[in-house]
Image (tube, rainbow, N blue to C red; front, side, top):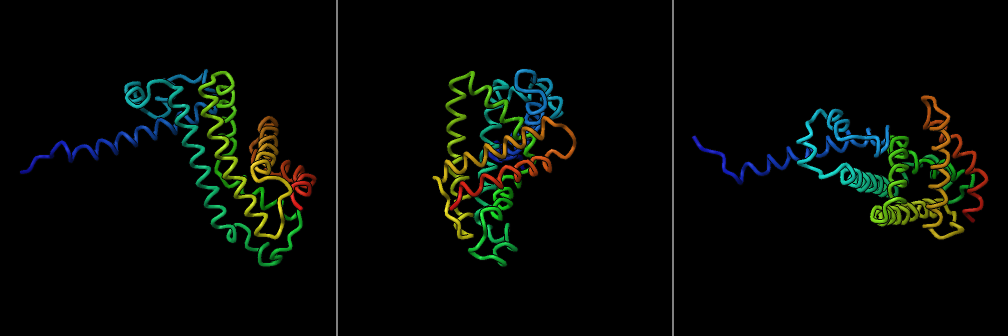
Length: 224
C-alpha cells in the first residue's frame, strides 16, 4: 500500500488553508461592518467563523492586516462586477436599447446608472465597511496611501464603464470619466447613508428612491 508523499500533501493543505482564510475574512467582514474595527475583537471574528484563535494567527498577524486584506478583496470583487457589467451592457438595459437605440434622454439614463451601482450585492454592509476603512485611512497615513490607490483604481474603472454606457445610448459625458464616476458614486453613497440612518428593512429600496430623486436634476448637467 503506497504512502502519501509530502509533495502530494501540500495542495490539500494549501486548499484547506485558503478555505480557512476565506471563512475568517467572511466572518470579519460582517463583524467589522456591524461593530467597527476598534470594537471588533479576534475572539468575535473567530467565534463567527467557528474557529480558534490559533486559526486566526496562523493566517493573520493582526486584525488590521485582516481588515486591509478585506478591503483589497472587496475592491477587486466590485471591479470585476463592473467589468462584467460593461461587457454585458446590452443585457443590463435590453429594453431601453431596443426601443430607443441612440436616443435616450438624460432622465432615461438615470435608471441605467443606478443599475451599475446597485448590482454589487449587499451595498449596505460594504458601505459600513468602507466607512470604517475611511476613518482608519484618515488616522493612519500608510492605510491612507493604500486606500487612495484602491479608490483611484475603482474610480477610473467605474468612470470608463459609465462613459461606455453613455456612449452606447448616444449621450456624451460633459465631464471627464473619472470625475463623472466620483460625482455619481458620491451621490449614491450619500443616498445609501441616509437610507441606513433612517432605519427599516428596505434600505436598498430607499437608497434607490433617494438616488433617483437626486439624479433627475444631476444627470442633465453630467451629460450633453
